[in-house]
Image (cartoon, rainbow, N blue to C red; front, side, top):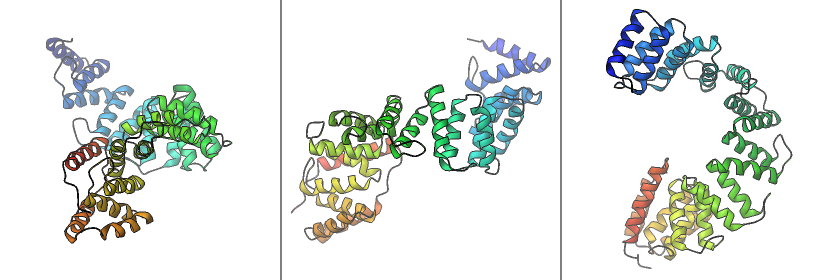
Length: 365
């Protein structure tokens, strides 16, 4: 570990002899708290000294601190200024960051063509992230004419050069849909599996769906459940819903209504309409959970408001079995409900709801 005395000596020397390399080295230590107490202000000061002397790495690191608000509020315009200086010296990381800023319109007017120019420059040098982003631009028709074949070409290069999971997944989607490449479910499954093995939740879900339907792979409910579970554990709502269906039907897993309720609830809290309807049905029938007409009607109301015609009919039928007080409860709960956004938030809501319902008395018929 670098001692405080040595750091003080380095700081004095960096300023006395104006050594930009010493300034950058010391700035890095202050930025991460290596051998000294973390001090963003001091890191910024030292980076600026080196950046003013034309050190590209200092300009880039200074831009990163400005962009991500390290030591001060984010300042995209300042970040772009320093990225530009580093990019002009040919620093690839700065050129890529600048492309992203143009892509997102951060600190500069949004300019897809300028983003494409930088992405292409770097993609031709085999930078995998640039290859992937260039593929996205072609897929979405941003800064270039929409061209799925070109998108597939750049996705494949990113996937080959650095095994980029997003590129593998998006290439799988193109084969799945036959966009820019011949439709080929087997090829789609191969790319989905590569991304899924890297933990990509949408790829895990799509691969699970292919095993469930026998598209490009043998029909295998157990394998389907395996991939759905991996995606569901990451908070992927469609996988949570489908896993609930498998437990409700005993496909690829032992039939377990309580598990079905758990996965439906997680998906329902994220706003998955079919899960909301199925959860309501289980509450209404007391399957996998205590019968609770208030909760059943709440979820029918929420699913109906999302446009589910079956839920619209079901809520009317269930309302006929409920007291006015129960209906008021259901309406209040439905009106107060909002979909959760993050996995920890969704898990916490679902866990709390599960504990409440497990001890709740059964509603009268």
